[in-house]
Length: 109
Image (tube, rainbow, N blue to C red):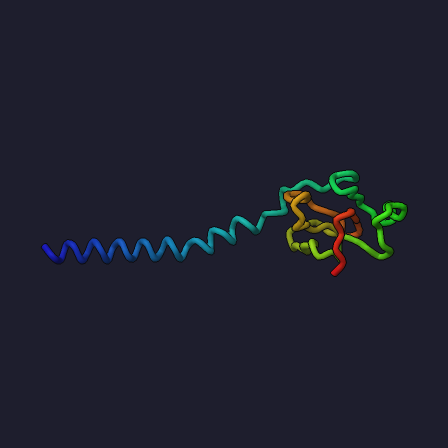
């Protein structure tokens, strides 16, 4: 009878360790296409966002040279189309922003 108990414990431990080892793999698979299905932010999306920073030149918070690709929130993601990337700002979750875009939440790096 002790053999059945130890066999069950071994089986449980093997399966549990395999499940725990699979968690990082599942996480990676889910993030590979994170931006693949995202929509592109359009002018006026949030925080006075514009696809072209030159269009924000008359905005009171705009500073010369500020663009999405030099913002602290910028996420240069390999899965994003050319000229676009992600943004870690809460208002821009699940949308892509233009690398040359700008919004009033810009934080220069």
